[in-house]
Image (tube, rainbow, N blue to C red; front, side, top):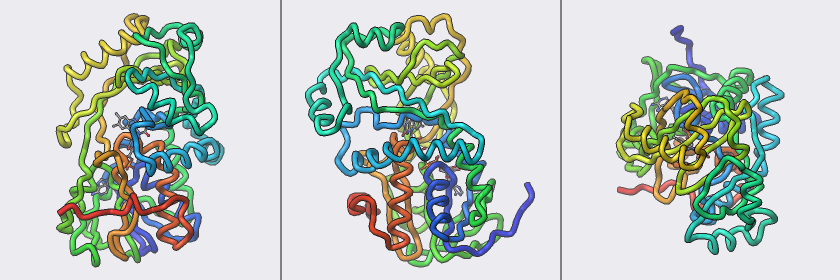
Length: 364
Ligand SMILES: Cc1cc2nc3c(=O)[nH]c(=O)nc-3n(C[C@H](O)[C@H](O)[C@H](O)COP(=O)(O)OP(=O)(O)OC[C@H]3O[C@@H](n4cnc5c(N)ncnc54)[C@H](O)[C@@H]3O)c2cc1C
């Protein structure tokens, strides 16, 4: 790796997942000089591993502050994806075909949650469900959420990376692991022996955020929650996201199917394993029996930034140190709103939503 000199900047962002890259682009568009450091290549951790459903899985289970961010983001996604595609030539393949979801004991709750929003959650018959997804077998009549979309996460990451590389006010430094020391009010960041000079710093380090903050004697509950996924070869057996019994199938534009996921509290243990494979494979075949004749291309694991109730931390920890992390299972869908909110707060603009619920808290 060729080492470059890291320029002094207005804002240093540590971590180049969707949260770091979108935050950088928001801040740079507002005139800030931004440096992003990532310990690896940008966009290759949770933001690569994630399924890319542009909705919380069972949105009625989440608190209003999460719904507020999700709703803002869902409205922003069509333009964001079009801009990424048109500016970089990399298409994140947004599919706006909706989601079928079995809600078992939560049907009333789901319908009540969707009541105020046109076409958020709709009751359909078995025949209608069958017509939407002829190859899918469900053990109950699903609900229909026609407004849900999905994106191909690795491509969204590549397009964001290219946008950052192209932006004259962003310096993206890959393979630059940041070490953080000092205190919350006076944090010191260095990488490859260079001290990084910045007016303010933002942690967008996903599942690693708790580790970085522990270096500043601050205990934060954000921790890795491993998720494993399977990828099936192009087969065009589903047209839209299908969620049943906690497991989901996500179609890609080329006919591949991503099937997920596990939820494991095992620290940074990255290896995909046999137990997860067997459990996911059995769920996939139960949902889409014809997958038994389809080749499996890959199994992988990623680290969600787990947080209590999935509530992200977005805001200031001191004048110098800011954070935008802890989005748990919903980091892709929440990324546009979270990054805009962070930028609003850093630049003293009117925030898009009430920032109080996301204010970082010391859990010591
Ligand atoms: C299996 C799975 C399925 C998922 N499905 C969905 C879904 O369908 N929809 C949805 O909305 N969300 C989903 N998610 C969640 C979503 O992927 C994450 O919440 C989101 O990607 C988090 O983004 P991030 O930028 O905060 O973290 P990351 O993408 O993990 O980025 C953090 C970055 O920080 C860097 N970093 C860490 N420490 C340092 C350091 N010391 N110095 C420099 N760099 C550092 C890392 O290298 C990494 O690139 C899923 C996640 C998984 C794992």
